[in-house]
Image (tube, rainbow, N blue to C red; front, side, top):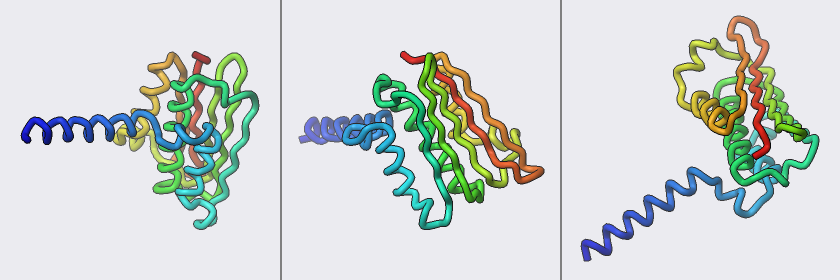
Length: 157
């Protein structure tokens, strides 16, 4: 009985960890649909926040690794914008060419670069991009409402 209980605990833990690595929505939906669902679930429209999603190129042909990375970047950026930015508009742009470029920009209150070093979310975003050989930058200022711009460029792998 103890072995059975331990094996069920291992199974449950593994299942939870896997769902954190690969978003369940990407199993059922294409990348852009999953991001649109995320936007709906976060209730931006209900809170008067306009989210624009633009795409140039074939995002859906990207590898699973890139799609998960792009989804997680959008998820974290949208979560931060919803919680902290006090933004009215958020623009998400994908450009797929020789590389893939993701730009997420809001018109919120911004934050100081020192504050950005405190949270794990932004560090995690940067590490995800760098692990794939990409470039990551974040621009924001809390001294004047100029918003925040996240920029990630990834090689197509």
